[in-house]
Length: 579
Image 1 (spheres, rainbow, N blue to C red):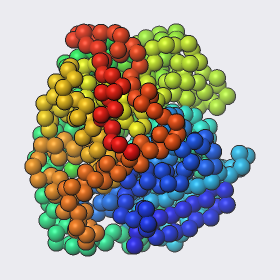
Image 2 (image 1 turned 135 degrees about the vertical axis):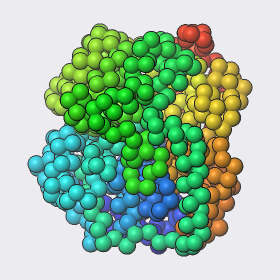
Image 3 (image 1 turned 135 degrees about the horizontal axis):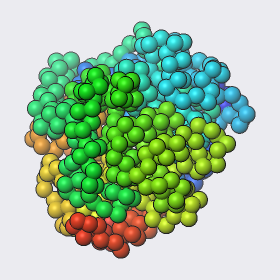
């Protein structure tokens, strides 16, 4: 029987319970969203004791199936006020699974003046530890001290200064196989929720854990073999992503006229070649970095990397396209090392890179720093380390907050979450996702760039309306289901193009649990997740009026295609699963 761990952060009591009833058979996003829907009052303040932080492994996490090292983090978002699930890699999820723990829930809230705690989880139970030596530290230094105390085999989940001070753009960082806190549950401000419960870090030592049981080992082995073949043989998951990481998209999206530039004023950046995946790999090879590596054991896509500065010193890893865009063309910065430093600072502070990039654009709009000045952006971001610095406080609270503080009216957000790295006027399928996602603007919720631009799994005109609402809806359903499995979302590229991929996923789940599980069940899982999420938001006060993009997308033509956003509220509602 799967186990769920409940941790009361006020009483410091931890209790294991069988995962049954409404939570039976659920993993990942299915479990986080169901638990938040059932147990968190939709109208509660996100930083109150009533909110809960839920961490859940996927259905296949901890098994030998390729690319199953992801986990979901859920709660009511401090940034948006909606329900939230944020997905991350790193070593933490597989260690949690090895202890036969499907997930854990941080509940209640201690008194404000209580010192920050570290939770230590082993096969023998749960301990609360007060470690003043890591209080207030960035995630890199805090992780190093935690590894020194608990050993290099530990898995670490940690917040930085932004999370400790409950800033709305704060993330939760997870250590990767090299021990770097470079993997983020980034969006939605869930680091603020963890900080509100006075938890600085959670450390797992999985040594001696029972591991995962497989009901039908032979069937699972056969399905796992076919699954790995599907991923390795697809041109995106087997060649493109391993070769250049996700930043291979810079030149592709720029050529398509969908690369947001200078806070969504242009669709192309004239210096895109200087921040491209090709340029990144060139610098990595020159500086003896690592061009491809996985963010967790068992990854065959290997789209992460080790990026070093000009002296060969490690700066960052997991250097994603969205991050390069956020600090690059979005801000008119073309120096890759400055972009990498901004990424490193976000990881250390515990800030979402997408939200922080668009926040810095608000600072540029407001005249705080000049457009294109990478060093000024770095200096401004460093002010977040000081909890009393007024500009640091503003910046760490995200795009909408900063725009309000500075009197900026060009604000690229939906439900107060910033719009990511694809302009919705020239990639309208993902624009539908931005508008209708249960979590605010989120490209991963329904990545229609596949069909709009990459032509994976279909060919839908990115400039027209036809097919884009239906495509977004189907992808949102599929993505929710994938987020419940523990798979990296990038497997979707291969799934969309491979006839038997969904059947193989169903076989893996069937063999893992010894239950009948079909392709139809995958779709049903996705729809149930979305129903939980949409109904939570409805009871939290969100209506169809909130499912629309900012007016400037509707009123302004985007060069070079002169495209506008032209979906009505009524049309957009057709992209949502009825709750």
